[in-house]
Structures are given as C-alpha cells and as structure tokens.
Length: 463
Image (cartoon, rainbow, N blue to C red; front, top):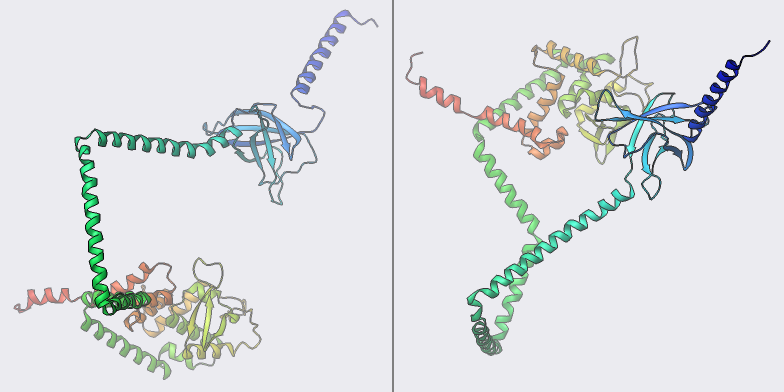
C-alpha cells in the first residue's frame, strides 16, 4: 500500500504543532507529563504578578501561577490560579499563598505558608491569599515617620527665625540696653536685702529656723494621710449626694416593710407553711433539691446558668466561710464565688445527703427522673421548677421568673444598706451602671411627687 504525500505532510504538521505546544509550555515552566493540582486565591492587590511566576515552598519550586483574572462576583478582587505539580505536597486548608518580591529587581513570586489544620485542601479549592511588603514598601514605611518629623522640625525652625526677625525689626528692641541696666540695679537691691535678712536671722534665728521645720512636718503628715483624707472627703460627698436625692424617711419605711415581710416569709417557711416551707420539711430528694436551688438563688443572686454549671467540688471553705465558685455569664472558667450562709449551706448539705454515691466531679444539682437520673439539669428545668414554686406560693404572675430571684437579692442588699460597689461585687455585674439601675428604681419608689401633686389637686374635692 502506497502512502500518499498528503498523509506525510499532515503528519509532519501535527508533529510540528505538538513540538511547538510542548516547547512553549516547557519554556513557561509547565511539565505536561506531571500530574497537576489547581488551587485558587483571592487578593485585593496582586502587585503586578503575572502567569508563569513560580510558586515556592521553603525556597523549593513546587508549581507556578497559571492564570490571573478579575473575580466576576466582586470586581474589586483578583483571582490567581495556581498550578502545583509536586504530588508529594499536601496543603492544609488553613494554608496561605503569599505574594512577595523574589529579587532586588522587583520580580514577584508566590510563597506557600503551610497551616496547622489536619484537614487538607482538595483540587480546585480556594485558599487564603496575602501580599507581603516589598523592599521598597518596607523602606517607605520606615522613612515616612522620619520624613514627617523632619518637615515638622524645619517648619518650626522657619517659624522661630521669622519671629526673631520680627523682634529685631521692632523699634522697641532699642530699649534692650536700658532694660539690662535696670536688671543690674535690681540685682544690687536684692543683694542688699539679702544682707539685711541675714542680719535678722542672726539676731532671732532659732525661732525663725523652727518655722520651716514645723511646716515641713505638717506637710509630710498631710502627704502620708493624703489617700485617707481623699477617701473621707469622697465618703462625705457620696453621703451628702445620697441624702440630698433620696427621701430618707420613705426609704427607711420601705426597708422596714420589706424586712417585716421577709421575716413573715421566713417564719412561714420554718413552720412548713406554703410550697417552699413544704419543700424544706420534706424528706424527698427532689423536694430538698428544689428548696436548696430556690434559697441559693434568692440569697446569693445566682443566674440559672450558674446554678446549672455548679459542681459539688465548687462548694469549698475559704477562711472561715463556705463559698460556691460559679462560672458566670460569658466566662470561660469559675473565677468568681458567692458566700454561702449557714441556712443555705444547711439546705444544700441536706440535699447532698440524699446523693450518697455522688462524686466531687458530679453536678451540684442533678436530675431525679428515671431517664436522666444523676445528670446535670438544664436551665429550662431550673427555670421551670422555680416558676412552679412561685405559683404554688401564690405568686402567679407572668412577670415573675427564676431571674426575678436575682433581682430580689440585689434589691434587698441595697435596701439593707449595701453600697453600690458592694452590691455590684455581690451581683458580679461587669458594669456598675447595671447596679445603678436598681438604686435608681429604689429612689424612684421613694419619690413622693405623685402624692404631693394628687393632694394638691384633690384636697378640696369631694371625690
């Protein structure tokens, strides 16, 4: 079979095209016989990097920039397509492709900075991109503050020279010699006065010398007690402002009423009256738990999340007091504590006595249901059992919740005479402005303005 000339010509053309194609890719640094992986990275500024720029890892070339183009979804961003031809390189997902200057002439390359993730990027994944400052930009940042200070210094010198020129051009500068003559006469008078003073000191010296010593002693005493004097003055200012704003009589009356009401509630609880009293007198583990949670929240102002997070080991002795370390809202550890009073500790210990198998690592308050017995309560469960106790006591209002016990604790502490700082520390408020809300509400309740206005309007009315 005879092969035609056209066949050989076509074969030659195909070979030439193949050689040209492979040759061009070889010059670009692309090896078509190796397996490639492609990755993408977004940049706001690519610093003029172009396709075929090398991609290196610790100085070793592992690929090259395949393409650079505008990101279609956000035209303020630029996409770089990178081709990695080293099959042994495994790139974590939190790795970064960083554009940097590879030489002193401004040549650009991409540096692969490996991340710490245990998950690895797949082919065609998009990774983080960044731009490292080049030599020129770094020098510019270093020199710019010096340049600004130099300009400011030159401006200041120019201003000073201008002012000196104005001074010397002023006709009044001709009076300077006369001014120096007056200064010389003044110094002579001072010298004469000093001699006279020395004579007086020699005659009555001992008594006069004692005066600076006494004054120095008084000044030192004032200096040593400066902080105490400042605190005393501040305390008087606070007392004065508080007495001025508050209606003292009305506030004291409300304190007495609140204390009388609390005494009656405590008496009823001790007598076993009401649902809370029944919980205290009950031998049931659930009842003892609910009573301990209730008195702990209303006495120490705990949040439901703090009750839920508490463990048995968080109940400790600090000095002569029993405390409970709590993990507050937004906290990562149990760094704060509340002081447990004797009555509250008795209720908690009585409940814990029913949980003989519980370890120190166990939750302070646990579930008693069959499905989740011994497991930690949820905030929803704590809120529900407190709400049930309030309803059974007769306090059936939609506004009364488990968090109302915290409000009650802070309010009673202020009514009982605690300072704002003490109440803030007790409630563990991050901002004292939150504590001031309680104080403002108490002052508002003591404000008699409505009664005064009502009396003025209706005192002569028959209604």
